[in-house]
Image 1 (tube, rainbow, N blue to C red):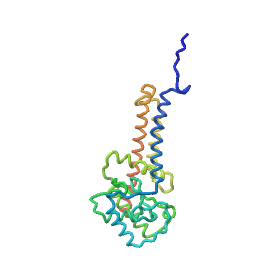
Image 2: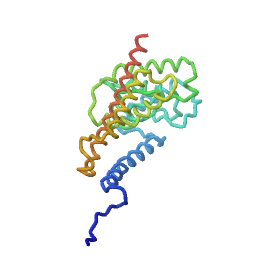
Image 3: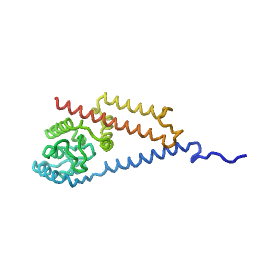
Length: 254
């Protein structure tokens, strides 16, 4: 009688399943920690290469003698005051709407500006208003929204390297899902496309057909699932970017 038998780390589960779950968590958890730390950090330090342009912009903004009455919880790194009519770049940094548009219009830029904080090229400006600011009707708000639309119309369609798509994912996905679940957010056509992507991803994950089967290749078979998930996330960010660009074009035409 032979006492040799196959053993598993956990009875009832194949080792390849446990390895796949471990690999998935090993990738997912650091990403979540990075995104949470990035979004929760209210301190935004100016990049040394941007100091000259930021100082010039700060003088222009302060010369306008705007009164800071909005405790938004995030300090604008340009004017050093509480963020007013917050505007977020595609790289995830938040500025006053007036500050970032002034930084753009009065700088010596040949194209899209570079973020004053991280120096990444800013190809998209996103509204980050408070609930109170969203309900307000003011001339300053209208001017800021028009400038944001003008910027997005000019630069949101510029070609970008693959790494920029990956860097923009946390910010664009957060705004996309925020508008997806809000009244008056994404129009139905874009909502249907996002739902179709999720259904396609769900069908792929539950389908027995796999490009690299986990049962044969073990942990390596899980890599194609992660790759497909990453491609779908990038595609959703592209859909949202196109939606913002289309909205900017419509605002310009009105």
